Image (cartoon, rainbow, N blue to C red):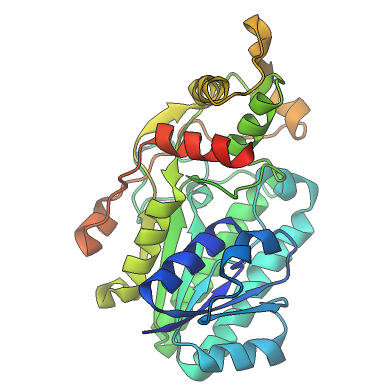
Length: 327
């Protein structure tokens, strides 16, 4: 039995991680300021004997000192995420990510607690040499494009965590997430799958940005959580960086078609003809000069070799669960 502290644990991935740890018999404490997390995400575990919850920011040193001193391992998921938030509020993104991670690492080092840091596929930027390996070069746009502030802030998180490991001996594991999807994910900050599903169920046309030929790999949150837990238990993962994601590519246009088909099967209000999918220029969707990545495909060889992990849940099954959860 372990006592896990999850920062951002009322968020999409954090709430699923909390449930999985509790099912194993672990004790779980969640700290979340509810800026993007939601109480309803953890409503199902609020009465669990092994669960505790604190509404607070990770930069509150007094609260974090107590919570960290009582835990065995920290899953640091608290972050500002979502393309729309990155473009509209870059100050919040940078400060939340960098200052939050610094605060967590400072307290973790005081009590010598293992920290698993959630990072992102955005780290690879505009690198076009797929699949992305953990040691591959990063290629980012200019600082005048707010688009790249998130990738940069998460890179600083990684550098800082790995520096604490090398210099101070703190046990650190970094995992880079590639487009995790599942129930409870919100489309509020631009997440594509819930945004598509909500519009499809309302009978509205799905807005695909750009030409729709950009591709991504979508991984079910259950698979993602299994990877995170596996890495937390593997001694050889300490001091390492791991990609976590599916390797099955799908274009955003094809993703929209899949969501429409499943929504229609599940009782969504059918949108007819060519108006079912509308292409929206990036400049109109976000900001002038917005830059996107054409492909984002992980190499998962490293995590497979380390803990034997590979995703098992097909995208169609996950999309169906998401659509049903939104009805």
